[in-house]
Length: 77
Image (cartoon, one colour):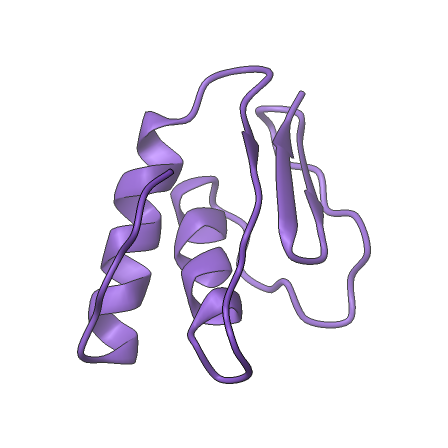
């Protein structure tokens, strides 16, 4: 388990991008955190690494890397 701490939304997005760039096919990420802990912001950073510009109001988004973004879970297919 990895525990992350961030002091700003911008930093959380940068952390998400780094995580996104390290993901490989078949990787699964699960989130745990209280309301307003930054889960969605972290997801935005991960999505940014895959050139996905918006995660809002979408259940599944596919990119050129065949990535499916499912709410608060990310599955690299």
